[in-house]
Structure formats: C-alpha cells, structure tokens
Image (tube, rainbow, N blue to C red; front, top):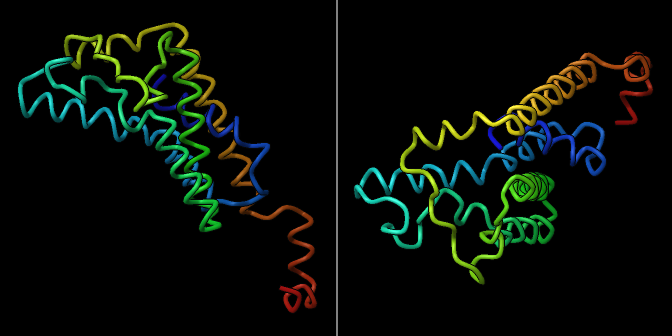
Length: 181
C-alpha cells in the first residue's frame, strides 16, 4: 500500500480507540501510519544509490521493508509510550501497528515483521521505476481511494469540531463554564 491508504485506513482502524479530540495525538498517529516507509525506503534507496549495489548485494538492508517494518519497533514505541504515559507516543505506536497490519494483508510473505528472528526480504524490483510501477495495482488503487475518502471524512469531522458543536458553543457562552475549566 502507499501513502493515502496507510494514512486513511490506519486512521479509520484506530478511531474506536481514540479520545474525542486528541488533535495532537492524531497527528502522531498519522506519522506512525507512514513512519515505516519514511524509515525504510530512503534507507534502502540511499544505500543503493551511495554504493551502486542492489538487493542482496547490500547485505542486511537488502530491501525496502527492514527495521521500520518490524513489530520490534512498534512494540518499542508502545512500551515507551505506556511507560511515560505519553498519548503521542502511544498514537505513534498505533499508527505503526496499522501500517504493519495493512502491509501484511497485501504481502504474501510478511516475515520482516518478526526480525531479528527472520531475515529481511530481498528487494524484488530492479530499480525505483519498477517499484513505483508496481503501485499500478487495482487493490492498491482501491486502498488509496478508500484511505483518501476516510481522510476527507476525518478532516470534515475535525473542522466541524474546531468550529464548535452546538453543545460546546452553549457551554462557552455561559460565564460559569469558564470558571469550571
């Protein structure tokens, strides 16, 4: 899956577990939904570009699903978030977990999840062009559309909340409401 699918579907999957208006945590959740790719894709392509090597010739970093795509990373952020009682770190971990779950649905061999117990998969594409061309897949395009639609729904919902719901406006209009805060 690519960008909007991870953002939107990841956001939708975590909606039942979120508080009503944790805008700050929601931003961390969205970062978590794409963090795996933000770590692993530049890592692989940067090393490949710098060394001229590809795939298995690079050694440990032999593809675009490495450290950022492991349960170990997601569980480390979850433990850190729970230990520090940090909503943003817990949200980041939730986003990472949705990314891993969605990738596992679309990948027939998600062994990278269990690293270091398993090896990272070797890059199946010859170059970046072939990698991008693989995204022209009906299932991925549908996931992108669903993700983008959900993001629009969330954005509309958040805009409505930020303008104030009728209950929030009436509470703000009462002078005693200000002293209760």
